[in-house]
Length: 165
Image 1 (tube, helix red, strand yellow):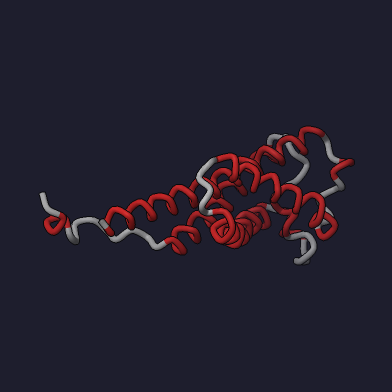
Image 2 (cartoon, rainbow, N blue to C red):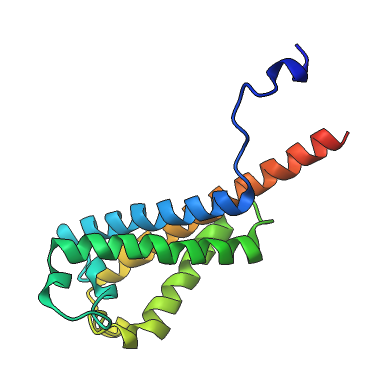
């Protein structure tokens, strides 16, 4: 079968920036939901709503509406996180790079950004279950973002090399 007979049969693959956008959005929403479940089952003291505390007034941010808005906001912020990974680390195809990226994100949030969010106590005042759950979710989130982006980047490079020959 020649390639011309398959032309137009399959949808055109997404460009890398579009794929990075969707990976970031989905990753932020999915892992935001997982963070909600961690707080729901009391594995962490930190609810997703913590992101709204310094910016919005009203009690609604502590209710279910605030949880939904928070998770969607995590999705939007995660798009930026995904593009940073794409810009800096896309060439590394090992999952450990994504895990390390997750650890770096954990350090940024818990050491540098926590003063902006009153719902996040200093690390020394958090329960061990919160620390361990948070580190784990950041690591798995980093692996998801990193491996998804690196895998697609390596696939695109292989396809380009294949079509060039």
